[in-house]
Length: 320
Image (cartoon, rainbow, N blue to C red; front, side, top):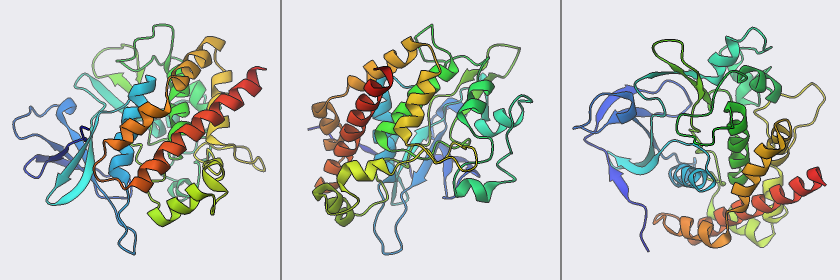
């Protein structure tokens, strides 16, 4: 068994502090690396509950990146790391030197055809759910002239086609945090070249990372939340705004609805990728985290496999 290594970045150079988000984060680079965006990594230390329980944001973000790779969703490289004795993870910058990065907030706000309320004015609302106008329709409209991420090699797909893949990834890993600061568009720094969707990033809020093992055990045994199927079923797509009085839909339903709005080949492609996962591969992935407890490993595996089955069943219902 080869565990994922944890890199000590205590001597890495601080590039700047990250101002977006609620936790303390630093952009850093290796001492011998050129000071270019592609060599910048965002270090995020793990956080602790008030009772001193360690959250699993580091392994969750690493696992999210690995699962993205398994199903072909472009995503940031992530490594386990420690800095000054504090464990965490670091995520490589998805922006390279020839690109400027516009978060979804900026991209939507700059589009005159999209009815969107800038989240800077509605930050308190976004913390409680979705910003007004951050809808799947607004995202689709804003991405109409945007190409797929730079490293994506399926020529027939555009940005929204790949965004569907990101949403299915979120559904698999129970990531409810795809708000408009957690997706972005890359624009060429010089000239009028084609804008491209950024690879996925900031996927820490996945796989029940914030739970303690007693709760996970209770869910696995069926004693709480209706078991794993009940727990994942509570995962609504709350970061996507819906009309007043309209109930939130699940992450699974939101992803499949977004896919149904594309050509049939798009959803078929992503369903093939979702189906490519198997229990042995997912189990092996989580067994490589040295710091995870047996309970947290089993819980993470069951979340992914249960969500795969939910996606499969709902897709069959839709296309029947």
